[in-house]
Length: 164
Image 1 (cartoon, rainbow, N blue to C red):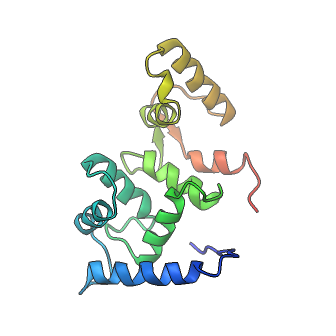
Image 2: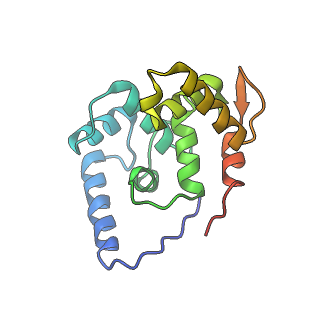
Image 3: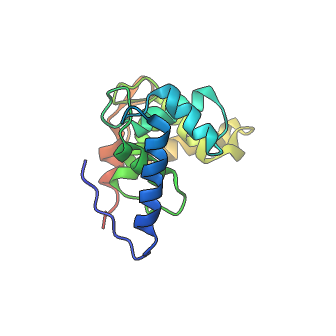
């Protein structure tokens, strides 16, 4: 995956350099981060020590799907979870990998419902409204299948907006 960074902030590359040095310090003597190292790293940097959440984050960061993270994957993953990051193809794919809880490259209906619930936690107590929101989201993403596998959702989402 090739990503071109457009950045007018002169401190951006210094930040990346410091992040790289922190990454190397954490994984030494290796150049890659295992899941165990990732959980420790993220907890050290203020993320909640929630086992399931950290495993899902690791899987979302791990776009090579090889069981360990390179610095590039960590950098892109951190950029994807940064709220100020613009929505684009890399972020959409990251979100897909985060909700693909079985790591099959497809979202199950339960994965999609989890995503909608996380986006709209206020609807958790109103089942009818939640179901309406799920149907609206499925319609917006042109998903027709209910139950089972929903398919390779990123292309559906990516094709629904223009990427700069």
